[in-house]
Picture 1 (cartoon, rainbow, N blue to C red):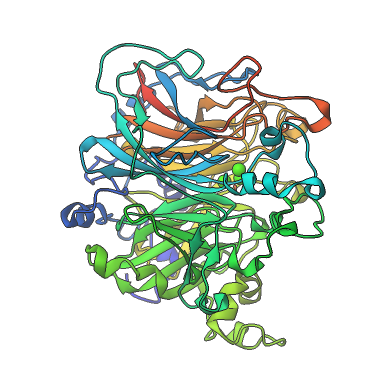
Picture 2 (cartoon, rainbow, N blue to C red; picture 1 turned 180 degrees about the vertical axis):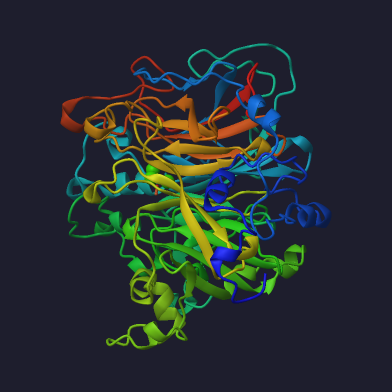
Length: 585
Ligand code: FEO
Ligand code: CA
Ligand code: CA
Ligand code: CA
């Protein structure tokens, strides 16, 4: 596609209806590609894993109705009100790690509120691996066993909270046994095929609110040559082919406030840390355990950071800024991917950051060369450093489109169509959110023009509300996780949704309409986050985040006892889901 082509001629004669239908994650083509995932570091695997082809001149015609019928592999799960993980028939789950579990030989513990996950192949073959897991925040009422205001917290309480955020690198092995054993109260899965923590691992490690890490890239100077202390608010994320995890710092303004308005953790009473040190994407090398913050990717409430390759070999990272009226971004590296870690590992340090102008169908550069930024009357955007530290303000001036809380962004592995969620914005009358499909010009992640439309809207009829995390699974199926807040769940506009859920999106085989099939439901007050598949698609990892989040609000005690049952404290838990008689595809 030559430069200057209009969006209308990108689709090679396809109608808009074709575009929408086909961008739906149900593009039923043969799986000709290797998995686009964080694979082992050999050059050969790396090179093939990056060869994600994209559509040429419009998406291919709808095909493969046989596959569509294979996808009717499970009956939709009925919504219920139980304090449990519920799954569609044909699947089973098991717990891998819960808040407070020891993860390595030195006794480090799994943090709270597990979120984004990314699987990395291990050195021992397909039954060995590493799983990066974000820990977004802390349910302090559960940790302390009562409601504790920020102003009454002791330093010891704050220190305990600071250990529970950031992320974990887990070392895991798949059980090849056939004992048939089950673990009552911790799932219904047979042992064989379960991924389990490697006991006394020397590779597993934690990153938390006190881990030293440098700022790198164009705005690194704001740290004045010093290490930055820690990370928190680690929500969505991504991964690179050079075996690093990308961890998005999302709601970072609720931790260090000294005189907080609204909820605040009150850590600022004991620790004085500059707000500009937070709100970045953290890159964690899973092999060296080193972390750093990538200032080139901008500073805002980062949800995920999804890495793909442009046609010319540059690295592209898509990102959402999860707040009402905020934008969707992408970064394009200056250099090109070689397939060798040493040559590629700093690719995300230098490049261009763009914000999406949906009305204009274009990506707008956020740099001093942007005429609108250069013309800012207050002179706020004279340097790239100033733009990156104040990305939201720059995006607004530059013409980025304000959206209803952009969350996860995922790219269809075959077509290159970019899917992102707008979770909701009740204040503007959007209670249920939507999934958006954005087609880059020429199907190229490096393009600066696009067309977009709603792919599937949430709502009672569709059977889901407040989409947040996305993942593409086998046969390029798209899966959606929901994040209805505790205060809204089961009430008012959300009366039909007593719990959060995970659904598979697909084409109705009779009508062709895009529909969502209910697959998994969470325990009480929990959110479904961080879905990822193993490369063989035999395991789906899901982070069950904050069960019992509203415990000790209104003198209720624990509002969930999942996963341990009885009178136990609720604990966020990373689970594995595997097929018994059902199919993920
Ligand atoms: Fe932490 Fe945007 O969800
Ligand atoms: Ca999220
Ligand atoms: Ca969310
Ligand atoms: Ca969350």
